[in-house]
Amino acid sequence: MSNPVSALIGGAVCGVVIGFGQVLVSRRRLNPLNWVPLTGIGLGLGLLLGSTVVDYRTTLPELALMGAITGIVLGAAQAVGLPPRTRRRWLWTLGMATLWALGWTVTTLAGVNVEAQFTNFGAIGAVTVTALSGLLLHFLLPFHPSSGLWLRSRPISTAP
Image (cartoon, rainbow, N blue to C red; front, side):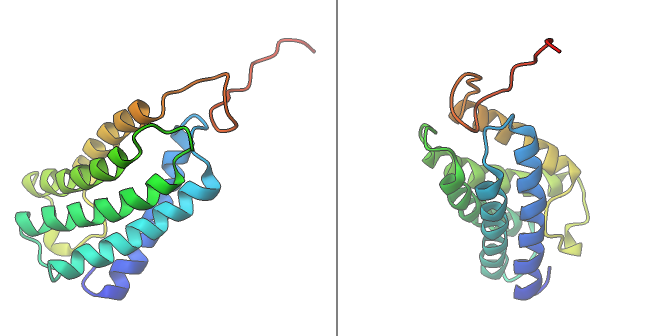
């Protein structure tokens, strides 16, 4: 992304895809009707703000700053979509800021061609952020099979 429109649209599209993926692996802990659009909005606006602040430059410090800004906007948007029982939801916002900065740092240090101005970090950054954000989400929103609409698992029945 090299301009505000591509940052906003590219971020929003990536956000919807990421949000949908997060819902799929959340074991019904996230409401897709909230989480997916909030992730799209948060990532679109976050990438727009972050890339504008660093003027679309791609040095390691600038990408880390862009990642932190993107992550804090994304995290704040997603924090709104966390279930009401979520404990310390503000940690999600701070965690996303830290993890998105880390994602861009890992991607840059791994030698990915960041000068191509991707809307999202490379696979190595994505694996890092996905694993660590999954752990954070598990900490903030533990799985309780017997409670809540988005937390409930359906029992397997062997009856005909």
